[in-house]
Length: 382
Image 1 (cartoon, rainbow, N blue to C red):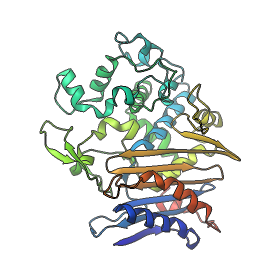
Image 2: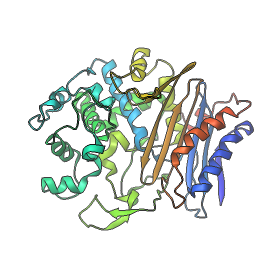
Image 3: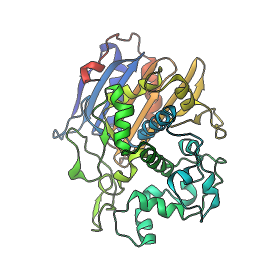
Image 4: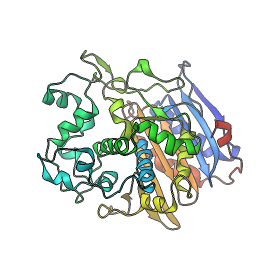
């Protein structure tokens, strides 16, 4: 059963049509989409393709956002640097008291290296520490669930896969270290710092860190769906669980994949990078500056928490998110358009690619003939 909730305009029907085709082809139960044009929220909707009416996605439904958490963490780091509390060239090991015995090169890793995925950890070589709970528990002789401190102890005891600053390799672990830096320098919890210094100035009040267990779902939070099951890593029971509810430990992933948000909340977050406010224009420029290495053959690169592609007329910046039960996308376009789409599923029997939504939303945006001038942010408390 198809249903749509929330506000839009007739001229924005291409977005609705795109979501309907995309979700029905993949049997995705729930989604939320928000679109911003020139700083105004012009569309905020929930989409549902399911016979189960126990939950209906709306504009203020919370979804796990997965790696859309990284731009949020990067903004917090930039704010600390802007306020003179942290140098982006500071050495991570000395900041956090990490042992460099296993690999002296760890001493050279900087805050900027972590932000740009240049720290030297490569999940394609040695695996992603954030998804190796059983391996780490066995290596340290500790019970599940493992802690962030145990992940760091274990990983600091291994050699880096690359010399710092020499190879771009996307690293969730690097963003865990950024969480610890934010906490060390600010003196408060990661969530507290982000909420007070980044989100509150934007009137974003709903965003919160998610929980792994199904029983701990927040009020208004979407359910998550996957074809896959796995042994739980959040207790010692060895019970087989739906993968989104214990196949990984969401609490440990806070800074790189742990936030819950509404699409409208994240749409408001994108406006932080449109003009000086929470961040100065100098800090915003740093977020999108080219790294020392790692520009791809087709011209895009990873800045500070954002993927960046220079285009005629400006630049497009974006981030994707992916966990079992979650597929997300946040885009800021050169022409003043931004959008955020959140799905509560990333795999299904069709085998279709969920990344296809990116091009399809650009196509939808390009086909809009007239844009509304209303601003819905205040409608949703933003």
